[in-house]
Image (cartoon, rainbow, N blue to C red; front, top):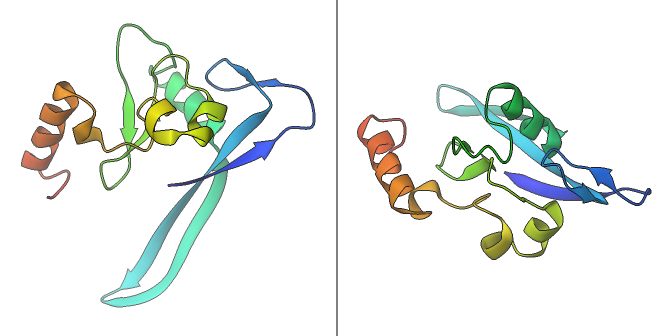
Length: 129
C-alpha cells in the first residue's frame, strides 16, 4: 500500500471517518502479472482512501462501530483498513506508527487477540510465515 495526500482548496471536507479535514489520502493497488515464470507486466490503479472507508461501511464495518472491530488486511498481513474511532488522515500522515490507529501495522503485532487471529490465519494457510 502506498499512501499519498491531497490537499483541498476549501477549508475542510468530511472524510469517510466523519472528521473535518482539509486533506484526504490516496491508495494504490498493484498486481504483477505472470505467465509461468515470466513477468508480463504490472497493473494497478489509484483511488481515494475514502472509497474503501465507505465501501467497508456498506458491508457492516463502518467507522466507530462499538459492536465489532473490523480490519482489512493486505496480502502480507498489514492492516489496510480499520474501523477504529477517530482515525485522522492528518495524524496518520504525520506519524503512522503512533497515530495511525492500526493502519499500516502488521496485524499479528497489534494485541493478543490479533496475534491469535493471525496464528489461525497462518494455520489455515491464508498466510504463510
